Length: 416
Length: 191
Image 1 (tube, each protein chain N blue to C red):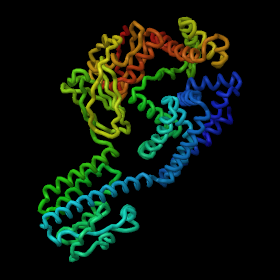
Image 2 (image 1 turned 30 degrees about the vertical axis):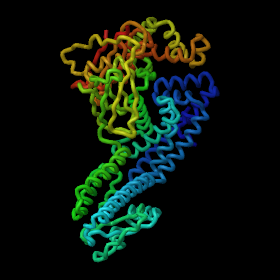
Image 3 (image 1 turned 90 degrees about the vertical axis):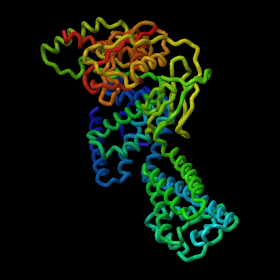
């Protein structure tokens, strides 16, 4: 892999000890002034070179793949998946209709038109045809369907792969619209409109089924199907909100005031019933749940959007970290987004240092609400200082008018 | 060293060119080429923060995806520096969200008080006096390390040999000494 960054070669020499003392000093001094260089040096000296080389060539390949795919791979997989889902849906519905019609014989012979698709392989073919508008359009597909006056075809006994195209009252138009719906779903696989179009499809199916006597129960079934599909899709696309409840493992009581933190800085606190709801926006799926006096828990939310968490009480006593005060200037507007209460608890939970004394830190808050420019103005020892800075840095976002201004927050962190 | 700068210069121009071309053509392979030129840098930076082989690889690819989204929305003057800041923020965000308790020094880039100050005459003279006063106030180990590194231009390894401190200690003393110096000097300037 080519390293167009010239410093990488230099650092490599540096690490191998091939540089003179003066050259080493030059590089070190530059790194002291240049964060990029410093980060690269630290990155390169941790881990071994062989591993880095392997990783870099993997990355090289990945990028090349990604670039040549032009995202097609991803989208096609998606579309194929969705089409498969809709095919299954339609198959299940038709199966249901078929059964119903056989059982009570009330089905209007002209309302439904079945079409056989013998093999799954063909399903997939059709799917890929639908994906690419260049190769075919919906009218071609519809042309393949029996015309409006054609009699109902009885589905064969071995039905698992039956694909049905039900045409309402034997007319072609609705089936056309169904087709469009499907195309629409595939087309929107990438956008939030996915849910919407699934809904639309659901409606169409409902409409389609209305002449059938047991439409009501059918609809329920269809809805359930559609729900499960949209749910599965949602797992891939991620749900909009993550909900859950936290309780004490021993007493089984709901726990209020528990910190829940979703790995993309969405954080919240449980309400009086131990419930929480967090917006879900990130790629990360780790939910961290913590509260003073309980074992911290990490939960993977990849496959679900709601969760019941039982926290185990933690009997080891925690070091006391007290926020004893902050700059009480009249114009102090900044406060932690999670509130002082929760913030104190957070400091409480996350501090595991045993040094005693006080560290005074002062910092500002950027426009995003992140603490920046954190400085220790009265320190204890190196570990405690770093710990205090780290606590502030990884802690809550801050709110208030002072964001992005030079307003400063001064915090005393007491280590007992 | 001068050959170096030339190389960097043409490199920057190349970045600029590719960026332009991508914006005109929207050809992903152009952006890929541009990113590839910086992929090692991004990877090492990620590794520095994440300290994990797999996570770093993933992060690089995520950064590339984000880049595709962002590249047309933002004005990018110097691609390399921009990408560095972008990558660093990405990793910090990841760490922050994972609440991984890991040492991240935020004060790493305090400038050494006499660097980059092109003050003239009296001011410079005064800075020197203040600096010396502040140096004296530093704890012994920090003072020694800073003195050897900045004033005697010794490299870390030499300082290790001279003082008997470990490499890690030397780095940390320089870091902290520099920070303390700055605080001290700022205070003196105000007075």
